[in-house]
Image (cartoon, rainbow, N blue to C red):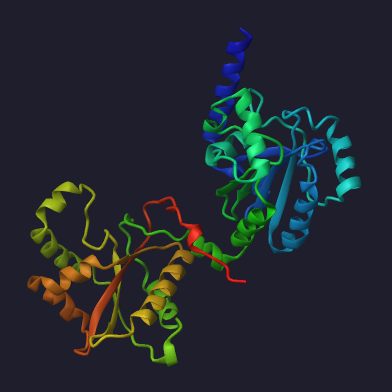
Length: 379
């Protein structure tokens, strides 16, 4: 009966977390028992941590306080939730814990009431956090990571297949717009945590890290003013000797896109049959930015910098983009599509280099892995 009750409680807690629309729907109790709504922290970057005062990782309080002091004025908030579930290493009341932390580590970031992070009585907030960022494993090349892996695997050989919090000082990073963007295990170096925090606090870097190639768009053209702003951002890209060897053609004419799309569909009937979501040959985007470079060669590097400016600016405006080369080849090779190039009015000494599809995104694809081993620092 007790087991059944525990299972029911876990289902209820999980359902509550699922029903919540996002991080700002949760309320937590502070160190004096008052309810605090996380919606009060909209626009802030949050680092949410489960802690303990008698753990080998407890000295991380020093690093967390240093992080707080360095970035709090820029918009970082740290939320400390003591938890006694791991080795009974957070004994005492929240007041006793708070007195210990202020006396020994002089912490200034807020502490909240003690909670469970796993099991039937797990905090709905942490249930939600775990659902957004699961366990990705310990770095077993690191001595501490290897130690944690060996210790946990002794009691549960499949521990790494579960999203549960593994130990004290697990950290969740929440972006300024409420997305749970990263999870750090207690063995992860604070340098990695700080780098991720710095990214979330810097709007330019955030746009770089958040930008994805979008292939599904809402049926909604981009406003002329935004397209004009994108073009302006593009032509303000770096250019060797300020030669600016590019031309832009911003296509807003929906009928023109539709007409050339009919040519494409006629030439590629099998592809159209295979793709039930096909709308147009430009990754279904409602608008296009066509980038041209000198026909006799050169200018591609500068044109690439221009395109990156445009795509990052689009990301910051809530727009999606996709850089396209295939449609360029089709437009150049299919005689029936010549009318499209004619409408672009490209001078004879220039040619179409690539096309940026742009529109309001109708998908949120995950980032694809990047190979950090290709980066080496020469010191």
